[in-house]
Image (cartoon, one colour):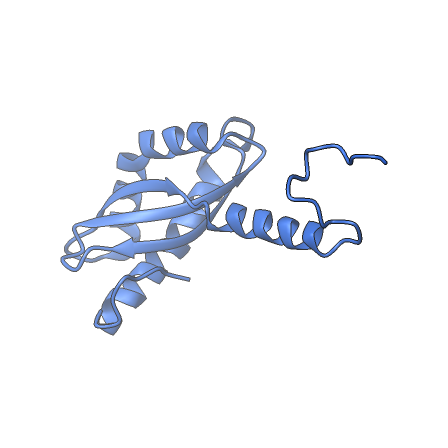
Length: 133
């Protein structure tokens, strides 16, 4: 699903962002070495209004996000050229890959909620040992 900052973005922008995400996901799955970059999942594409730039959000499993971002940004030019062949549009955006931290934040929030709902979770600092009387 695409990310968009404004609700006034025309439908073409949404469709193009979704198509870029789909095509990039296929390219990354086929061409990027999982042993080197980890398992990469694209979580969204944000296009500039003039289609010149695309911010591609991803999550990674089995590798450091910074290392995966570095590899993806290193391959961005090649991925851009492959997209040009697939999309058949006049302007193919320049790609910039950004690690999506929303999923990690969601997991952390869920973990904190679960810990707060456990019996005996009344202490302010969960790392502080309980005082015994």
